[in-house]
Image (cartoon, rainbow, N blue to C red; front, top):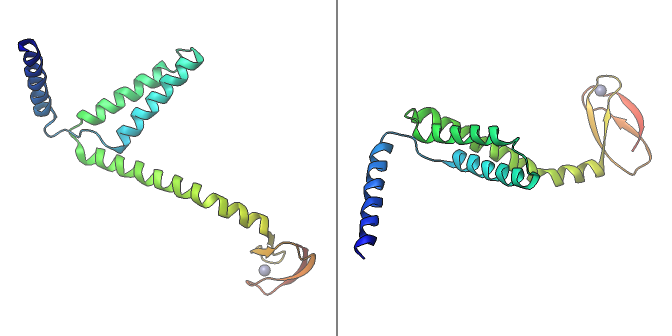
Length: 144
Ligand SMILES: [Zn+2]
């Protein structure tokens, strides 16, 4: 039991000194969590492929994570994280909209007005039809 509490003391002392070290430093955020996950993926891939080629990017990511964690320029790190979150939001939203866009592409055909170049969206499956340009008023025929 004595030995156990000794370890606990040491761990506690280490935690306290680490907390002191981290005062005024940035710490971790979503971007760092993403970078850690990326390293994990790279490590798994390099184990799977039995290659050391990914060692450099793995190390670079690790250095980047620690640089961000211990950085005292918290404003800049916060901004980086915001940019990452915005990008992630855009990508996930883009994925969600993809099925709707595919459905639209199947249902509509895009024509370009020969007079002014305006793009016109016409429902498919009506055969040869007359198309009226809503921008310049030009009429032309197309096969939907
Ligand atoms: Zn037109």
